[in-house]
Length: 262
Ligand SMILES: NC(=O)C1=CN([C@@H]2O[C@H](COP(=O)(O)OP(=O)(O)OC[C@H]3O[C@@H](n4cnc5c(N)ncnc54)[C@H](OP(=O)(O)O)[C@@H]3O)[C@@H](O)[C@H]2O)C=CC1
Ligand SMILES: CC(=O)[C@H](N)C(=O)O
Image (cartoon, rainbow, N blue to C red; front, side, top):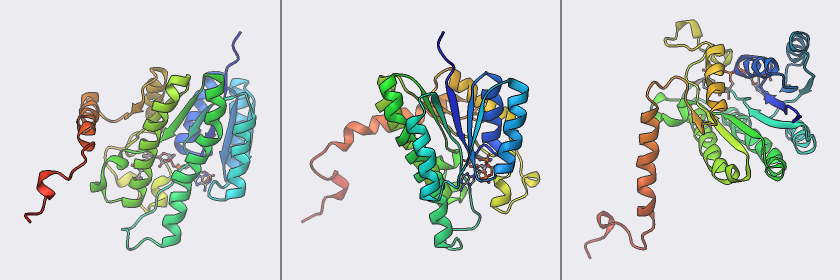
């Protein structure tokens, strides 16, 4: 019988990560839960163990701290039972670019991009060698929309999307599935970190609905899952428009509109 892989989930103490933990535990997966708040991780872990009879390990780590991040990287490299990484930990900060402190945007980038990248890098070679496994990266529709006015947060999420698409091209032929999940406004504590009351927002998705939809995409081995988008054809059209440009990047001379008169 093939063993059910363990799942390592970052940002599992609350919100989207905690909902992933619930769902994967229900499916019978053992879990490794990562976040800073140990008490919350332990409470969730105890409940999921009791309800589902799965094994649950906890790693308390601040993923913006290189030494603590390294502990999680080592676990992903060495623990052959872990076959699925859910790269979910992330945060957002409020304010415009000129209002945001340089150290704060630095920490945002460290968590939303550097940590996510390093964890994917830690597990990918082992998964590729075994010819199976999955990496789920949580992006955001904000990564497609500079118009939403969350420039640095959106830039980190654009990174997550690009990285996921590129990794999928590299790893799918080796049997490793990479999924980018792009939620829109979802009812979690992240809104407290941006200084917004989620109850004043419209069109807020419930976290359980978001994760259930993301898992439909996961089970279909969809590359990019955008739960709130009604017409998947719009995403396909964006990709087709982008791909149509690619042959036109290979020109040795500047385009006509950039040529100087002299
Ligand atoms: N909610 C929304 O509207 C949307 C969310 N997303 C994305 O979903 C993902 C999950 O967010 P969401 O559940 O909403 O947010 P929450 O704030 O509810 O949860 C964030 C999780 O990340 C953990 N975390 C935060 N900072 C660190 C850190 N430095 N080191 C380790 N863990 C950390 C938190 O745990 P702890 O504090 O214990 O460390 C918590 O478990 C994020 O990547 C977010 O960008 C995308 C689009 C929409
Ligand atoms: C704070 C946000 O903007 C939210 N996490 C999102 O990505 O939509």
